[in-house]
Length: 437
Image (spheres, helix red, strand yellow):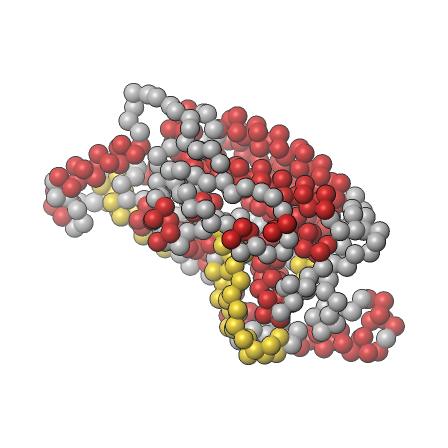
């Protein structure tokens, strides 16, 4: 990829990075480091940002310690939305927990469903036997979810900084994805489309053509956002050299997804540890060069374009075609994992009893422990499952990328202005439902 910081802007005003560096130099020269700052500059002010501030994108509270308008210390306070998903999983069958994954990153429920299903399938040992049509459908759903999440992320980021028009463009396109999700899954928001061993249903008539039409249209919207923001002087001044995360710092704090790649780290699970049919598809991994808010915006814009490219390839190669006249299966042929068809349940006592056992007792998973990481729009969504056999997990740990990405705030915010906090939070693009889970 080309250097994302190849656009040069000149002006009399000092950049945000220079202002931060000047503050740090003055503070160090005066010995104003840590607690000594009180003696040199007077008392500092403590400001609570959130948990009901609109720019914290949910119930995030940040306790800011200020020297004038310069942040000297930042302490995130999370947990206001805690629901105990990991503990709930211990009392749910493997299939019953699928709707709970919708509520993690609720801006990309289709991707969450796939991530969890792949983790359970890895435990069952059937992740390599998924039907090709199922794999391609899952990839289409994941990339649609990525586009949807990035559209909202960029739109809200721009709105926080003051560019309201961008939000209107991105939200209009995102609504089209909701229409596609509704026609495929029956729900717009909490889809619960994926099943262990496949998907809940095949595509309805005309759905693939509608996805193709959307991909051809959304490119124009992304280009329009590009024209509105990328060379906009106000946008560049607010985002460039603000919230710089070095490559080493990003790795140390375990960042993932666009926030990691914006710092120049070439790590994408779809490339480094490919799953489903990603190994057969061609796409590029966009990288930043500086790791500031501007880079994080550019990476998400290019990732959206790459997702469109992936969807086109999946539609071209979809086994069975758009209408699936050849009746390609969308679930594994394993009666101990997948429910029997409805007509067989209604006509066979054995199949009725089999469905009853699967629904009430759950899939009989083997004992063992696995971890599966999935490249979600926010980063690596991971599921660690500890099974002692039977229909429910003994323990489950969810690695939520939003939680990990927010951990860098205490190291990132000090030295910036209060107004930069809004910009930095918008560029990190987190969801508190996933962070607090």
